Length: 209
DNA sequence: TGGCAGATTTTA
DNA sequence: AAAATCTGCCAA
Image (tube, rainbow, N blue to C red):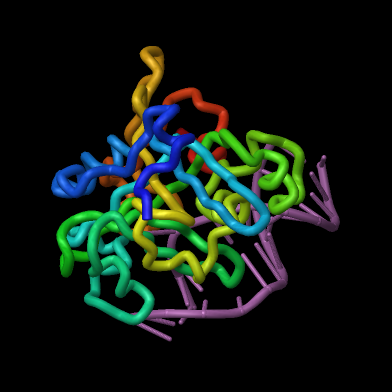
């Protein structure tokens, strides 16, 4: 039951600490830019670096799934931080979230885009495309690319098979963080809770900046 | 290049 | 009926 694998140590990556998840959710979202998300399945490993995400809050945020209390769908949001919340949307796609805030609160960060790092061939097969900038440039796309669905709901992200890792140098010196309103919602559109790496070609195009 | 139908779960 | 989406098809 090792927490870290040799390959992770070599690259100096590690799971996020308990303390990390004690920050406000918007701060967590910002700090997740540059982190690695890795999913290992029978088909192999697929990994990407987070370049776009959104915070969903429990107070004064009607766009949050947890805004009207707990339901079977959103139950993972009320569970421990550092776990996954995967939901199905528009009859077709899964969206992946990192649960934040203390147990019982109901907050999360929606991961909207990744820069593919490893397992690119596998991702291309799953996504049926060979355009790398189209593999993970949207919340529904990245779950297909990584092979994430309901079976990956409510998993502890510090362990295999689905891991969220902090890297030694999380953002490159020239990378700037952009902030905007969240995408695809009608309520609380204007809240500055979307974070992305400016100019990164893997950020969702639908964004309009 | 831009708009729209369609895939169909969960909740209101 | 609308949603934290994306694709393919169609018309210019």
